[in-house]
Length: 378
Image (tube, rainbow, N blue to C red; front, top):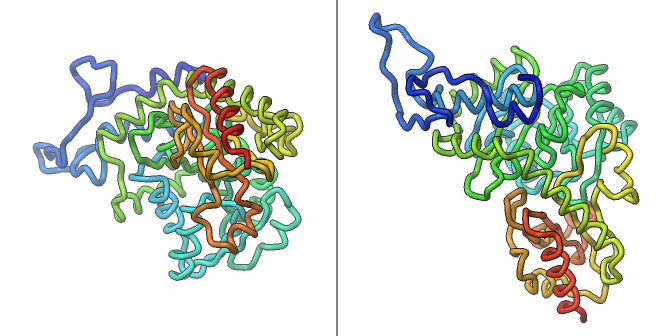
């Protein structure tokens, strides 16, 4: 199999099933029998390995063109395990606009336990290079930033990192391997919150990691087993189900997002639309070079005459809820839980709204946003 959509549907060869199952079975067992001579087999204890998890990990590694894949109990657990491979005293250059859960993990936990971080706009390669210290070990950023969809060059940052013997760690949650494969562009580690587009149905929490080299794979694999923040077999099966429909879902969500973004760009009650699929977006040209799609997430800045709280509470098709990448459309106030100082440095104001587009009919989405804007006029 060489074509990506075929790989999504069929996945790797099953290693354990003797019944001829088409769908990978859920191996809901905590332990496995030893070989007759007492030696170990591929599976012995489910924290170390499980046939269902093994299938998922091999599949995501194949899709990302990586050396090995790893499935975790959440995206944050995946990030935490990756950072744990670095020694005490390590310094990281990080994107200055990270998901709030990632920011909390880095700056409120790891910063208290021997790691240091310098936030930099990853679009500014001069600033990235200037932030490199003797103890710097890696550059960590999101391909499309959350929530303002700033587009950074994986290829350029990876080349810069390699020139300084650094690793490149990329959170590719918004694009998935369907729209971008960072390892092909030079990155060393790619991360996903599979809760979002890869899982795709809003019914699981999961994280995935793919590494480019056996050396990195060995370190992550050791800590996955040692720390134990693994993904349970049933959740692994749900992620596999999501992978099978990833392309058709993202095609629809991206088409919907493009139409909605174009509508909102012309609406008088919307001051600005952030979506790399728009030609007016500053990241459009780079997105065209390094991705094959803009995905289904966008953000807007409402005009001053629109009450943002009333707007998100006036939608009927869109749910006012956290997360993204599921089949239904969601709206969120990305600034709401941020401390005031974080709002100012992130560029967010109370007029900003994040919009995650689902699989509904485009006209229903447009009509719902239009009526909510009217209802929210001050």
